[in-house]
Image 1 (cartoon, rainbow, N blue to C red):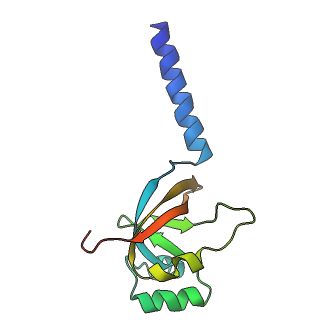
Image 2: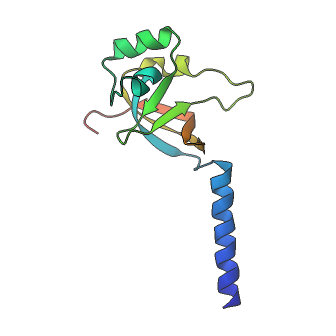
Image 3: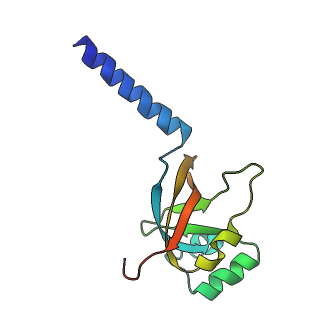
Length: 125
């Protein structure tokens, strides 16, 4: 019985350590639309109006984000220090559905991803 209690405490401490670090796993897949962050919040869009619109907003300085079907917004961030903006990397995907993999972080209700790989999602998926 004592071994079971120790095992349970160990597992619980590992879960708490993972949650407190904010890391949800290397290679986490995020599927969604690359959209202007302002449209996702202010206009409550579920998907971009058009790729041209998303590109226009991004070129004007609005950060691009990945908006999932369930409404979760992932902020693409740099894993390097000093950090760099990610709009240039996302511009070719603006207004399109993507699958991004990378390290995901959660903090204070926000989610971010350090993108390792990003590709256009297959049509109809």
